Image 1 (tube, one colour):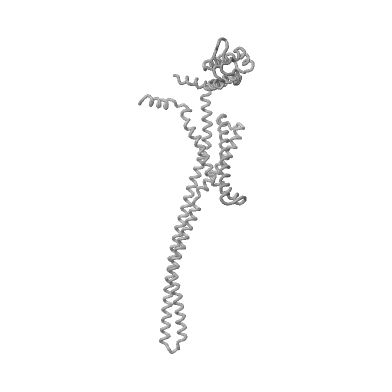
Image 2 (spheres, helix red, strand yellow; image 1 turned 45 degrees about the vertical axis):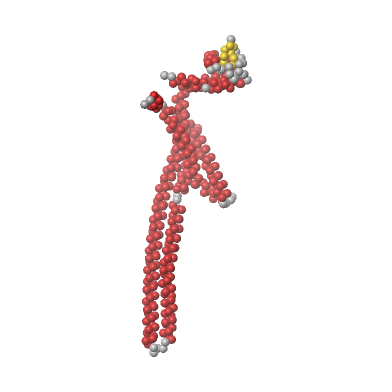
Amino acid sequence: MNVEEYSKLREKHKNRDFEVKNRSLNSWFFKSTFLGNIGSIFFAFFLVYPALLKAISAQMMEGNWATVLATTITIIILVVFESVKRKLLANLSKDLVVTDWNLKDRGVRWWLILSCAIVLGSAYLSVSGAKKFSETSKNRNLAIENVVQVDIDSLTNVYNDRKSVLILDNDQIRADNADLRQKIKDTPVGYINTRKGLQDNIDANLAAIDANDAKIKELDDELSTKISEMETDQDELIKKNIKDDTSIILLFILISSVIEFIIVFGIWFREYFDHHVFLIHQAKFEGIHLKKNRYLTLLKFIYKDGALEKDEKIIGIVKLKELVKNKGKVISSSKLIDEFLGDMELLGILVMEGKRRFTVVSFEEAIKKVEKFDDSLRLLENLE
């Protein structure tokens, strides 16, 4: 380990105040709120867009222009909605933090009511949109039904082709039997053997028809069994898709709910962090802040708000003290003026020549120096 590594470890383990511990967490949470807003807009889009597209298509226009217009309006509405939600939540969070969750305060109650209303509205849009977005079983099941129906039609055609051969054969046999029966009618009664031979052929043909009918029934039964199996498999797939849909819907509802929580908590934590850090450093920096503001006011006065240039004589000290005493509201104004003049000389803004003071730098440069005055003082805080 070298000195640099030790310094890093020392800083990490020694400096454990609230600001250091939570600075990165505050930044991460606040940035996550913007991602949360994008997520809310994304999910809500699937609820708002279809309804808006339907209305535009029915009342205004159809086709691609309707799609573009519906998409644009939906995004604008949702972005404005999320922006208003952020502002309301920020105002509510600030009031809650400053008043220490004093719900008796009328202003806090109003912000709370408005924020709850818009958060619930946002949650409804987001959750409902997430539900629609995750409902995929309807389309999948429709595709399955179409595929199964195509397979059934194809299989039916195959069996119909096989049955058509038997049906044509039966039709031909029946036509032959009709001819044989006509021959029997035309054959004299005395030709017993001839008539018997014709009848035997008819009987044989009838037996062949019965055999073909049995095969046709067998094919029908086989086709019915296979169709039933395909429909059973289809029903099982549909049920599985619906079950999967339920799980996916619950998952996306959970995601959209977490997104809303991140937005609310992230915005609240930013206000809590800023207020807590302000309270921690208030005692340390309030005096410097007040002094800097007073110095800036005095600087603008002696520079005549920029009318005075470099190397010019400023107002007399006695007159300046008198004006501050009469016009200002500062206790110990004389001491303030003495400190001000001393610090201005220290910063190289004013210089004493004889009994009068002159400006050393321009008004703009003087303002810059005083603006950095508190940074110069803070350098001494790390001196141990």
